[in-house]
Length: 173
Image (cartoon, rainbow, N blue to C red; front, side, top):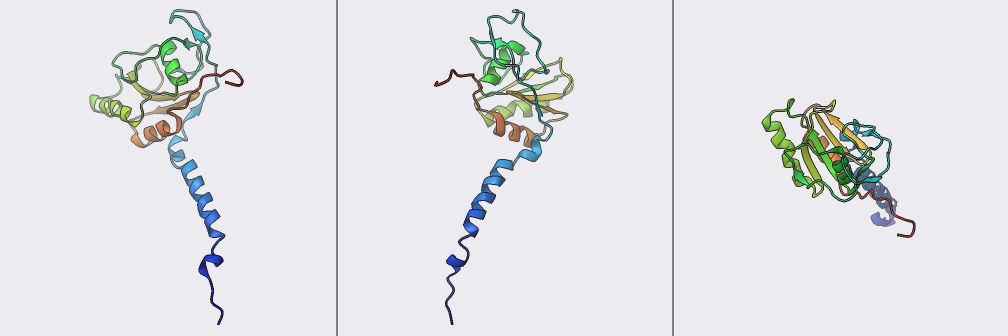
């Protein structure tokens, strides 16, 4: 009777398991991001003031375009509206911004959104009245509108987009 070495018989299984794990990691959370819109890139031109004339943004809230080059809005929770020209620099620096219409959410839902800052060091949560959404998550060239606080979608968006630097570098930099 011939002795069968199980390890030799199943050697081909290891590469399949590794490939499966890689694919699972790459696509896990993707089902939560189907509604995320890819917004065309408007570049990252620096301006010196929020009142400086510039081309209009192509989304509301903005996801790229002209912005203040010298400062970013403080990460964390803002109780004040953050200007477009300031928040776009946060996005360029790898941030995710969660904005909500305070007229359409109760204080408990706002508190849930504010607790999301613990997910990553580059998250800003702020009110925004003038938008078509109840809640909008933005990252560089990405926009995810939400009708309600959906923690799984928020976590997936932050996991996928937070921390990615979008500064244009000179060749060889």
